[in-house]
Image 1 (cartoon, rainbow, N blue to C red):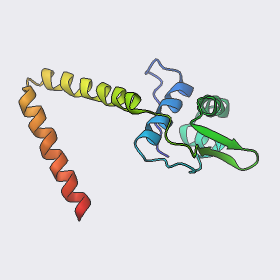
Image 2 (spheres, helix red, strand yellow; image 1 turned 180 degrees about the vertical axis):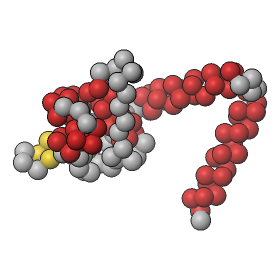
Image 3 (cartoon, rainbow, N blue to C red; image 1 turned 135 degrees about the vertical axis):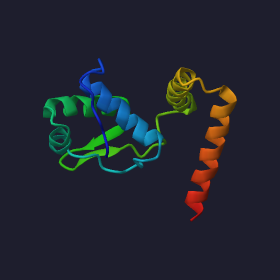
Length: 130
């Protein structure tokens, strides 16, 4: 599970973990039933206090995104991803906004950005077939 935190983000670390786990599930990189890293392991990996990870996991559990199995660990909920289409669209909209902002700073026209996205999509589809 690849999670990165930023102390300059302005967002509490537990919230960064919460958001990134939600994203990993929405993106299909964490599957239903898959176990999350133990609290201590993730805290060591991120070099943060285990209580911060525990709070993030608690918030994920409250949201129904994960469930705890006493003495066994924390697992991605078996039910369909709690991130509906609206939430997925919101995540992509933020990324699109960042891309468009960058394109404007680089003085790249919208049509060029759209063509680039189409080219990258075609290249990715070719890679998957190999």
